[in-house]
Length: 294
Image (tube, rainbow, N blue to C red; front, top):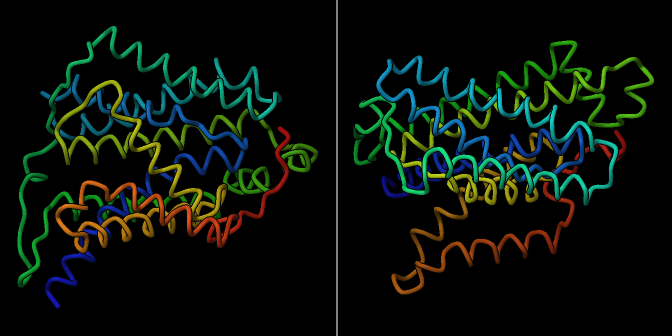
């Protein structure tokens, strides 16, 4: 029983990581039908903000990480994505890759390619036990932050005028604009929220690994995109569900695979993802929005 509970705790923590990654991607896709592969670089920007402010008090580190990610998200939306918003999906995709490599190259130019180290708070390195279950404070922090962000985002989307406009735009942008929804404002707020999620993800990643480098966003965006696809691309509840399904699957494989096969865990995990999508190609929860024009 203790071993099963331990696996559940580990799976919940990993699923929380994937859920935050997936939410940032699904949020932009729901509004613009854009798979923003530059989202990983927003996480990287937040991580380097942590590095630059590592000697300050932890509340200032948190503000710096989130503020930097939100600022870069808004800048890229205004400079890179707004001019091509009405272009084809292929153009939007290429633009996201261009932004991604531009931010990576800028980080290499300023910080070099060598890994850097940073710390947020000593408490995150500590742990405790509940019976025979080992729990780190980082796990508690990760699950709590993810739950708090999910509740706050759900409240924002359901109980505020801007949230209502964003949900309307996600379902049918043309109809929403006919109802006087400001397209520029809705998209900018969506990017700002994705930047906030990226900043939170940067805090969790740096808290876990203590290491940052210019290409650190590649793995999070890959797993986030996969979780969003599993859950149903464009569905925010689906993105969260996909993140936890991916986390649970990864934890199960980690604890059941023989030692010699363990290095191929991710390959087997993505094989299972392909199997799920073969059975249900639209994902677990289909998004209601179908109109892609903006």
